[in-house]
Image (cartoon, rainbow, N blue to C red; front, side):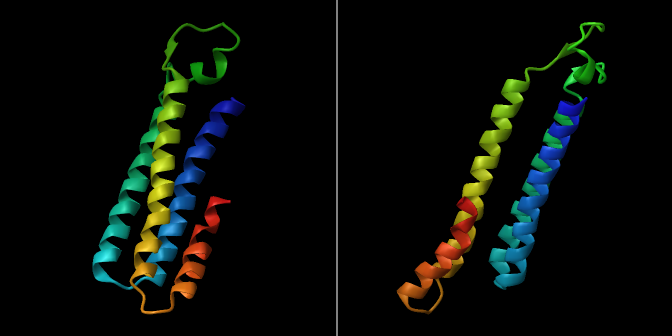
Length: 129
């Protein structure tokens, strides 16, 4: 049961962290075209998060098998959580890289000295740590 709850919590938190970053970008960057891109990314992020939450909930048939199959008392089947985990990891890596590229495109267009641009890009990329 704990692993099942941890999976759901992980998917929800990853989605909410990315949503928080996107909302911060919406407050910082005023450009109309860029805001459309941010909202599209937000929708994609939420759809992916919902898809993985639903995949986690319905990974076993019956659903209770997700936390009882260790005991061997129930019959049913589960999807391969390794494949689900790998696909979720790949999608999160792509979204993370996209979230790093988004502010860099805006900072690059600023009319400031190159050194300050690099400082701003470094500040936005601190999330890599």
